[in-house]
Amino acid sequence: MKLGAITLQNSVCLATAPWELDGTGYEQLGAIFTKTVTMEPRAGLPGDEGILQVADQTLLNRTDLRIEGAELLVHEHLPRLCRFGVPVFVSITAPGVPGFRKIARYLQREAGEQLAGVEVYITAPHSGAGPDITARYVREATEAVRTELRDDAAVIVKLPPWPDHIRGLALGAQEGGATALAATNTLKVLHLPANPNAAPLVGGLSGEALRPLSLRCVWELANDEKLQLPIFGTGGIFTLRDVEDYLRVGAQAVQVASGEWLSPGLSARLASEVAHKAPIAR
Image 1 (cartoon, rainbow, N blue to C red):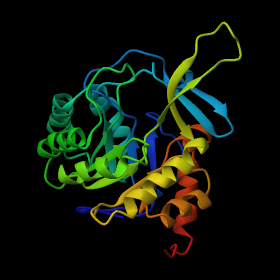
Image 2: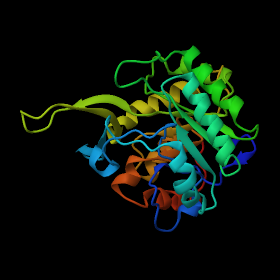
Image 3: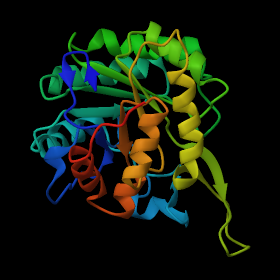
Image 4: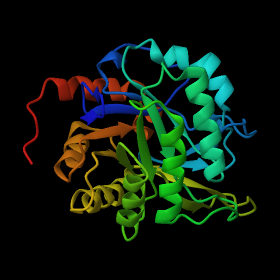
């Protein structure tokens, strides 16, 4: 996969990488994407408490998860992720276009040369407050990030799992100067605990249950003649067959997230399998 001046060595990438990424084989990955960060840290539950396995290979990522700030990422976590020698992309989100511009400016100033680029995580606020997710909003958020980064840094826009609307949002990203697209981020869901007196849990669905929807979104993007951007497929990747399915419907690379959380080292193992297998014919 080619991202501007960068060519990924493998089609398997690690998403929401653990800050303490231990083990071997990660140097075979195409790229590493950090957990999503905001400009300022947000208090909440740590990852191990805020992620629930609600079905086989399916996770609920609670909305009250703790989110690290950009400063801690740059000064503590980023050097650890860069040591594997593969491109590192920082995933960012913000409550609006000015917020995206601010965090992109900070990352360029403090860590510009360490970063291969930035992933712009587009999502509607869980509170219901904030900008509507429209093609115009995606274009403006992408432009804000693009103008703050160095020219050869990649801007990857991660879109919501909305197959009826994802083409329009993707066109907004393309018009805003995106280098690539990622389909998709999590789907808003609600989980009822077994205890009838417990409050419902809200969050984002990821893992196996999301895969058919994400595959459809990738297919929609790959079959739009107006879109000229490469695509990352993400959602429920656990096996080499899952990787191949995303490539068959039009993705050029994949991101592994829930699979790595459930089975640490999975992304490295899949990257090794891909490296030793003949390319998939489309």
